[in-house]
Length: 190
Length: 229
Image: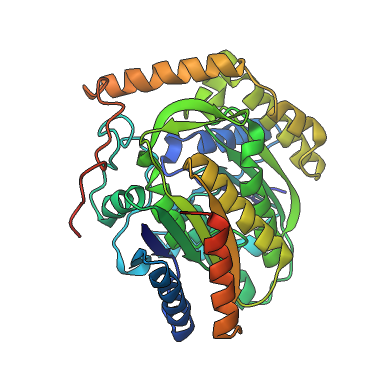
């Protein structure tokens, strides 16, 4: 079982490393493989909206920087973790940039999912999504926006399951660990 | 209200984007009342620090700020998030005197307008955090029907888009926000969903064919390929 972490924090700090360390422990206890990608260390242009990934080189972004490498890792993972601060309830621009550049993973044609139109699958298998938002303090509105965001993304990525959790900056290791364990358990990934 | 309208275009395609087409047509309608909004391309603004500084400095003087953006992966494109973050940093760092009225327009390729709601909720939260007066959001589905064509040249497929913008222009002239009438029009579909889906498929096939890729649409390049870092 492969778990890929997309770390969308624009800067690193001790607390972020603590969270990742706790996540690593949780993953290792399940005998899963873990890879963490700090997106801030990657070179990634903004999506141009050219749809070259659907027409010119189907399945691959036409911009050859670090994004296509991460796209390959996403689809080859069983779980992808979106680890991010929140921007007015949305993901960080850093994380969002990678996701904008990942629409090559789905097909341009439409299909119906629970009565709604979405892009159909390109691959037979997609990863589950675990969202972990890192906040300074509780905020019901932006937390709700984050949960909705993960849910909508999971629909569009054809994820078999999804979960979203919130970690706050002043929490103890045991609180962080409990949150992460809950998130992984909620994914119901076997 | 002259020179007090700022229009932020969130399309990375410049003047060829549907998001821009909405703002351009809005200016066409406002011109009938001798008004013009300054259209700024957010993706270019992030590269031009001098222009960015000018725009940031002008925000406090604005009567209305309207952002028009495409829906990318369920919310706003990354460069739009970055741009509004910069606006937020500027507003929060200084003491602003005024609260410009703020309106969001989000358009998507999905036919259902409600799929844009999350992006509009994010814009609303942004507006509240930076001290703008939120005057409503317009969700627009089926944006592929417009495909970046100027609305006054889009014929029947641009019918509801034009009506939405004309209704919005009236609101701006009246000094109000997004009306229920505007939302009602925005939720209408020019063609039934099944036809939209079919035409979309034809469009992608044709586009891929222009690259000689019509037989490769189903490609799975990452099924076995592991790209080396």
